[in-house]
Amino acid sequence: MKSEQLIKDLLKQEESGQLEFKEVVRKYAIGKTICGFLNNKGGQILIGISDNKEVVGVTDAEKLQTEIMQYLKKSMVPEPPIMVSLESFGKKKLLLVKVWEGSKQPYIFKGSIYFRRKNLTIQASSKEISELIHKRQETETHWERQACLGIELKDLDMEEIQKTMDVALVENKMNEWGNDPVKFLSYYGMYQNGNFTNSSVILFAKNPARFIPQSRVRVSFLKSGKTGNELTDDRLLDGNFFKNRQAILEFFGKHLMLKRRFSDKEWGRDDDYEIPEKALREGVMNALVHREYALASSAMSVLIYPDRIEISNTGKSPYNQSDLKKSHLSMPYNPDIAHMVFLRGFIEKIGRGTIMILEECKKAGLKAPVWDISEQTVKLSFFSNVLLGGTVDGANKEASKGAIEGAIEGAIEGVTKGVKEKLAVLLRAIAANEGNRVPDYKEATGLPDSTLERYIKQLKDGNLIEFRGEAAQTGGYYLTKKLKAQLK
Image (cartoon, rainbow, N blue to C red; front, side):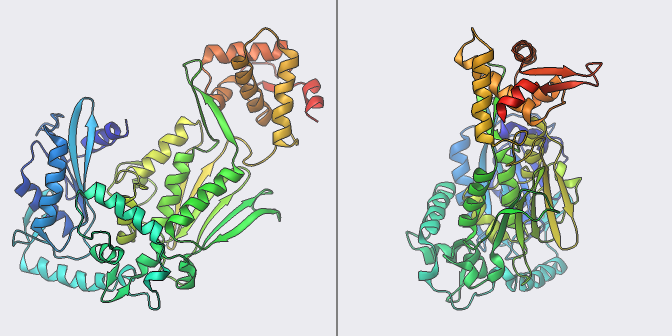
């Protein structure tokens, strides 16, 4: 389904300086276009699309995926950051060739330098070649590629490097480095002239904060809100990129309560946080990848408040809020870091991550998240419908869970265990959000309309909830005094 949505998003666009459609695989033409993308701002080629944007598909797509990757890597210098992915649209297979803006411009394909001008690929002029060379000189001094003095091979996390090597081998269908981590890092520009680069330290050092103190990440749970003085859990993470990612996900697992949603299929259910974990993961990855690590004052934080989660990082975004709501080509601030993370499969399809965040929050019935983009920082705010890591009507949440299930057991008879479980989900949603109407509880529980109405009636008949208000549009459901007494 993700593939189909990506294809639909791309087909809504016209060919441009960063997008081209091709009906069949012609390797030489693909090579010229990719070279032009590398020497400009990156881009994508979607193969299997006719001139009138009809999805025709690609025959032998898996075989061609490997052949294209090998052809481009052998025909182009220097080594290009290229990914070729297999996409599905209905029963048809397509190929998506994607590249970021190259960090070693100018790139040469078959002895020629190509450039992208609007939706055309042309041979670069002498002026454009000069500009590309100047740009490369600036890129070579980019912080990611600078040597981090003092770090040795023993300071690196071999387990994380091996995981990345294994994934890179599967993705590229090539093995230019054998089982040698130094050759692997050299292959991707993270070991140069006898030195490990800053990007290799951020990604793979056992203790990167020893060499780059600003690489730490702060995670906090503020039970009383921003103006309160109660920091329930506050810590600094000083692991490498991949270890910090895992630690942040575990922090969510510690402080966010799982919420059970039921599908229209009576017994189907899906457990997730109040704010979807998939959206949170993508938000965290974006902050880690696009963070401006070079600044001594660089910072990143993940803050859980009772009503929202804020993920902030130091960095400049090339996009505004409206750009992030539509398909766009990713332009990572740290291309070496981004490429490694992309190899590991931790980044969504290029340009789809922010759209996925919006879609997941919408499906969960939440207010749309907001990106606050300033000169030096980017903050992503997720909003919740219930208290995060909080309590239910003042009672301990675990005790309340048991008390609610016990109350249902005593008040409602003649129903199956499965129905009682669903009644408990609904009753906990009402306890956490008293005064809401039926549609609000549908979003919170995922129960279909007919089932929800039936369960509401059963909870009312059991004297567990009551409706207050003069009209359905203005009133809402509340726990009865009897149940509140039981919960206490």
